[in-house]
Amino acid sequence: MIRVQNLVKTFGTLNAVNDVSFEVAEGEIFAFLGPNGAGKTTTIKMLTTLLKPTSGKIQLDGLDPQVQRNEARKRFGIVFQDPSLDGDLTASENMEIHGVLYHVPHKLRRQRTEELLKQFELWDRRNDQVKKFSGGMKRRLEIARGFLHTPRILFLDEPTLGLDPQSRNQLWTHIKKVNEAERVTVFLTTHYMDEADRVAHRIGVIDHGKLVAQGTPAAIKEQTGTTTLEDAFLALTGSTIREESASSADQMRQFAKMWSGGKR
Amino acid sequence: MSVIYILWLREVKRYLRSRVQIIASLGNPLLYLLVLGFGLGPVFKRAGNGDYLQFVAPGIIGMSVLFSSIFSGLGLLWDRQFGFLKETLVAPVSRMQIMVGRTLGGSTVAVIQGLLITLVCVIAGFRPPNPLAIPLTFGFMVMIAVVFASLGVAIGSGLQDMQGFQLIMNFLVMPIYFLSGALFPLKDAHGVLKYITRTDPLAYGIDGIRSVLGAPNVAFDARLDFVVLLAVGTVFLMFGAWRFHKIEA
Image (cartoon, rainbow over all chains, first blue to last red; front, side, top):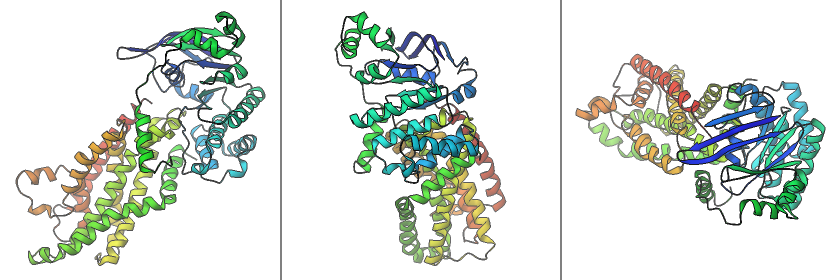
């Protein structure tokens, strides 16, 4: 379903993604793990046509996203690391915009919206503005929206970041349910190793832009001689804390917080 | 339902739901109208230039449309950092459709804002010559809005942070406003100022509104104002589309 061969992305002299290759089968849940700044988000951005690779090949459901861009985009849904909902609009309106952007016919749009909002337990709040939702509800809505156009692949970039254990647990239950019911391939990144261990069929570990290991959680633990995925991860990537400078998004968030009295 | 329509509708709904934004955006124009309109009125009259409120009202309307439209374009910066832009960028639709939907939405909001200010001007004592002037004024407001919403999108497509936004505000938006002849008659401008003001698209927009509203001290023929705005609007729309097309998230 996803095939990546010798993928490279450079920003000036920085090799953000360096010769990465992997495959994800249909219906599989693949966790892409790595420390901060390892190249996870850059890889997702290239897979989802937001960034052009410097070199290498990508195939999504047999399509080259650089060439058959819009066809490839119809095949996947994505939940970004940062929220991408419009807080001023209601849950239904956010779903509606997504449906129109993905050319989902009106009747089907209505039907899928109802189905998914019910499934993700948001139907009763469908007419409320999203800015009034909790973090967990927003995340659920984003994931429900990602499924609206019946994608073959769902990309989840740190979908449970900042959520409490109850919300995280509920979210994965929903994702697994749709993954099984609709045979959707899920490509996810997360910093929660227990989640990856529990949810993913296979795992890829990236560090300094290079893929350092891939296989089932059990195989990775065996390969590193560890008992938990967290220990395996540390064995593969080291225990040094990675420093990242504040991104422009972080700066903007800080600015917005200042102006909205910390409500954002 | 088309992509352009849904993105246009999004901008309009967001505006109509934000009462604070509506009230806040009336503040600056009201201040200019009341302080300058009533403060400078007697001096303007003594100099033989007629009623200052009749002269400055089109400038205040133009100002309101300028700020609202260019900020809607620059709002791309917020959408870019807080997410919604990414949702549109990965969708299987052309960037042109997204850009046009946003620009038309921002322009509509700016025109609504301009109409509200027109109403405030009328309450303050401004008198349009005849009812026909209102649809023509509306036409010029639409053109100003499209010109600057497109410019806003073009600039917003390249902005990465708030420092850039402040730079644009101080070195582009404010000069556009002050050089447009919104507050002083362009026909009396001399030397370098005269030539600089003629490169400002807003000058033609405000002058057009003045022409159709029968305000004193009109600088150009209204047909020239129309042609210049149409040409600049087309160029800025294309420029905005080109810049938007090059966005990488």
